[in-house]
Length: 434
Image (cartoon, rainbow, N blue to C red; front, side, top):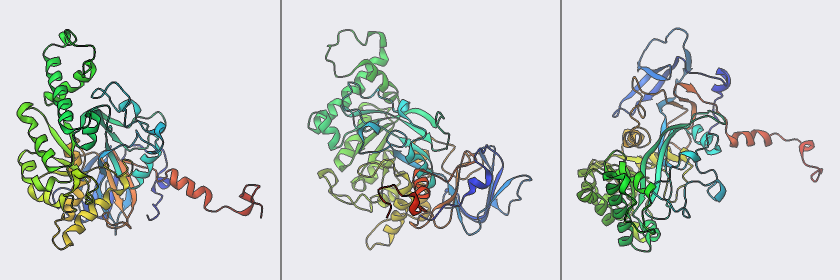
């Protein structure tokens, strides 16, 4: 990654929302395929005030010269563990999973969010400004409730939570089957029983405990947490990979008609793309899932995203399923690979505009972040200036704004680099004098 320009040093560290004009760049708005050459983006008081070519710079505005650069909306990780997992190999820093807990659907990731978790700054330097965060598998098919966060630099004690309890996560793939007792039928019993108990709780909360066995599979708090799912106020994110599992998930609405479904994974989704599109169910996945690394992903292909999109499915990219949930900075490269797939003989890829949408507009739409994801008047001032093509591996942000505030350009990695880069011999420990 190229070295970031030190804009924050120029503007000072204690920046507040103000008027900023980003001038002269190629502005990819993520509104359809709109690209504005020699464009200007004006951000005032945290919101986008104007976008266009040849706009006058407001008096007193701070100017960011973007000539020769590309300007995009801030990237959004459609699923991640940012802020709740610091080092995935260190259990003490991982608050995504709770396999030993007696609760499942009631688990809420919100209390675990750490605003100074080092991966946040690393991803922010990669252009990620917002993230959806979710739990991993718990004791049964329901893993708990996820949230949306900002990646703004707020310091210790600051608040990066945008909205908690945004969705419920359920796993009906092979992992979910194992958690439920060893088979898909057992997983489906867990799921249907949980949703049915939520309906019973909603009808009469006071009577929920009466007449139930002490060893009941659904605790009161879990049933209560599933009420907004069955009545359609909260989406149900369902992990499913195999085509037959995906079709079964789509069929859930016959029994629970108000369910708002979001599929995650869906590596064999291309085989049933028309059914997913007809059900108007969005998908969170990645473009490089092409290895049949399990029996439920035998039909994986890098053309999955292209074929889903061509069928009319809204696709966003997220971090899960073997890719680190904290590596949001890799999202542009997944998008770039989706574009490159179109050049492979027999492959189906995305246009550049479609690829940008998978990491900006689409995840915002899928998770209800209606004022994010595009560069339009009135949207939040999340803007990234890139020193090259944002979908190329060699490009990097030179400026990142979140809610109209220029973000710092340091992370734990840059601090360590600077600390050890220019050591002299006298700085070495005593055991290395020669």
